[in-house]
Length: 411
Image (cartoon, rainbow, N blue to C red):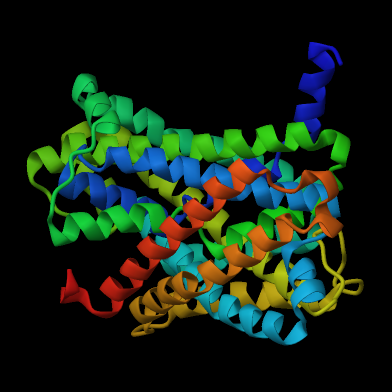
C-alpha cells in the first residue's frame, strides 16, 4: 500500500481512539492535573509516563476486540458471562456515570461564569445543544464535531508556553521521579493515574469502533488512532500541570478546582492565558457531558440486547435514546438546584468507578485472550504479562484512592 493510501485509510478510520482518550480529560481530570501542579509544582510530572503506558495497553486491547468481533464490550460480557452479572455491572456504571456527568456540567457552569455568563442560561443551553447533536445527528457528523472539538484541548498547550516555565527543570522532573512521602502527594499521584483509566472509556471505545464498522484489514490504522489519542491526552495533562506549577505553585496559590486555576492565572500569566484555560475547561466539560452519557446508553443497550447507535432514531432505538436523554436531563437539573448534593454525587461516582474498574478490566483481558472470539488476534504471552501487570497496578492504586476517599486521614 502506498504512503498516500495509508494516510487516507488512517483519516477514514481515525476518531474513536482519539476522541475516547482525549475526552477522558474531562472536568474532573483537568481539576486533578491543575491541583497537582499548583500544590507540588513539577514534581508529579513523572507520573504521566507510567500513566501513558497503562492507557495505551488497555485501550489497544479494547480497540482490537471491537475490530475483530464487531461487537461492544457489554455484548461480549453478556454473551460470555451471563445476563445477571452484566445487569449488576450496568447498574453500578449507570450510577457512576450520572455522577461523572454532573461533574462535567459543573465544570461547564463554572467556566461559563468565569466568562461572565449565567449558569442558569448556559447549562440548559449546553444540555439542549448536545442532546440535539446526538439524537438528531448521524454518527459521522457527531464524530467530526467531536474531533474538531478535541483540537481545542491544545489551548492548554498554548497556556503552558505562555506561562514561560523553566524547561530544563520541567524535563528533569518528567524523567527523574521526585517522590515525596507526603499524604497529599501520594493521594494526587494515585488520582492522576486513577483519573486516566475509567470504566466508561472501555465501553465507549469498543462500541464506537463496532458502530463505525472498522474491519480486520484496517486494524493497524485503528491501533495508531488509539496510540495517538492516548499520547495527546497525556501531553495535554503535561501542559496543564506545567501551567499551574509555573504560575500558581511559584506564587504559593492553592486551588481546589480547575475553574479557580483559570481565575488565578489572570494576574500571573495574563488575561489571554486565563481566557484560554477557561475556554478549554468549557470545551472539555461539554465533551465529557456528551460522551459519558453516550457511553452509558451504548453499554446498557448492548447488555440488554436493545437497538443502539447514534445513526438510529428514537423510533428505531427508543431505549438507547431515552437513557441518553435521562442522564443529560437529570445531571443538568442537579446543577441548577440550590443545595443539591453535588459533592456527594461526585465522590460516589469516583468510588463506584474505582470498585468496578477491576471487574471491567478482568473481563476485557479474559475476553481478548479467548481464541474462539479473537482467533490469531489474542494477546501474546509477553503482552499478557504487561497487561496483567498494568491491571494489578491500577487495581492497587485505585484501591488506595478509594480508601483515601472514604477515610481521608488514613494516609
